[in-house]
Length: 231
Image 1 (cartoon, rainbow, N blue to C red):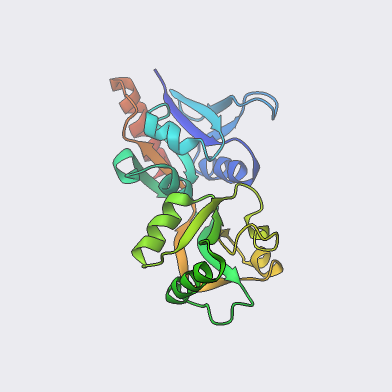
Image 2: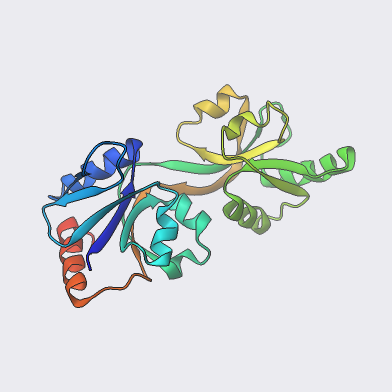
């Protein structure tokens, strides 16, 4: 067996992950062309690089198919129930920062807090005969957050694309999505609720609690963790 390390397979997250490991003496790279999802690891023996989408890494960690993985806090907590029983965070990597927030139309001048949103949702249902729609791909996190803050009379609608555009397209009245600068929200005439921060996310190195390890794997993992300075 070998210790399997899952990293994002493309984009800025992949580049920054390669850079982070490289600064610690572990060189990661693709084995072939950018269309291939095999990788290579130089600087330590016994580690296999697995190229995955950031969204796949939480489930592969939880299933024990990989031993370590780099992905966002938001994806771990959204995709894994009882996430802390299934994976262990080893290090926040200092990039991939994004806030998961709730935003409403800027023209809703009387809706600034979650209490306001709860009242608006009740009024919306009474006026329109159906629940206020919040577009998101983060169903677990949003549902738990709104429940904990006493917001009712809403429904979540799934959005896997340009969530910020759903209000303009009249397929939702509000959104819950990640944002880094807020520019896209403002461009779509949306405002973040004053108390609408659900989660601050960033790229993080996680260890699987389910992956099997031989004695030699344990030695390799211990050496890797020490080399990375995250033990």
